[in-house]
Image (cartoon, rainbow, N blue to C red; front, side, top):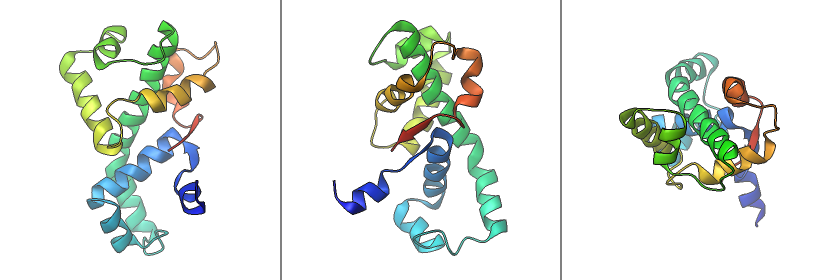
Amino acid sequence: MTREEKKVRRKDTILAHCLARAVIEDQGGIETAVETYGPNAERLGKWAALRVAIKVTPKAARVAGFIITWAIGMREEGRSEYSITEYQRFWNEGERQAYRLQADFRSLWQEFETPNELASQVVRQLDEKAAAKDAASLATRLVMTA
């Protein structure tokens, strides 16, 4: 792995990764985001950053929650991979809602069809005490490499 690839593959919280990707998506892609904000977001002022964060946070939070609940389902069922149908069944989720969540996930994580790879990283960090009721806080506590 080159030095540049190591820079790109950062270890951060799940929510932070989703927020960054949502900001990039909001701008229409990485090239446009870099052009607008600069390579290190140096042209993004405090108020502009706040406006963008407020705009993209709901989607980023939904996607982070989807990754975590996917991981919890995988762990509870002892699976190394999961499908959208298995997710839907485990969480008793309506078909339309499950597919909306998957569409949101795919729009931020275009390189993945399902959250299996990301969820596997989460599963390794989940201890036995972490349960479905903890899912809301896990997005800000668990880290992954993306």
